[in-house]
Image 1: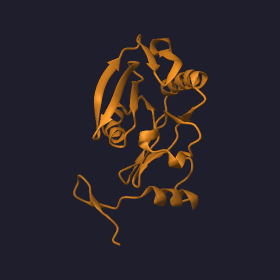
Image 2: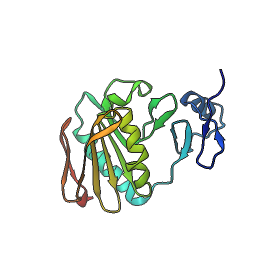
Image 3: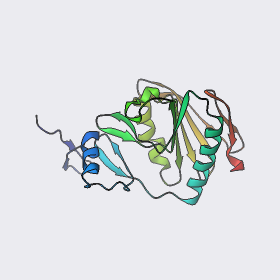
Image 4: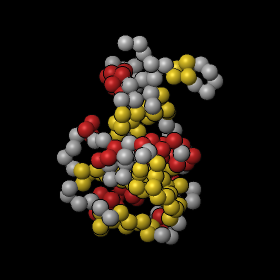
Length: 188
């Protein structure tokens, strides 16, 4: 079977990777375990180092969510979500049913994915948000660290979000599947 090839914007052919190939490259040491990247439709996308404010917002959300999490749900922290043969993403935080092996979690199992965005806002609200919708993530929050605004995406239908809105920093963020959770980003 011939290896599929994609054509990049500059007109040069590229060979996309599969999740299995990436995992094998990590196993044999071609790709180091400490490299931070995602696989987007077969292409390796390096992720930048996290800033202080990124970590502050992520840690605050992590603590609040973990304290309020019902027994039947699990909080993933930078967990790889294997969405297809050629795509895995690593949201900063994700909520999915407890008891599932991470490799078994599909997009439709993820109740909430949270991207804390300091330098990648256009990517997180653009291509990454489209991918989350395409694979059926039920809700996506993209938090703009600079403004503390939260862009909420809900109700994916046929690969697009059915509802989009923005919460301001003073708004209280809640999530129905976690009734005891609430946070106001202006307090972080």
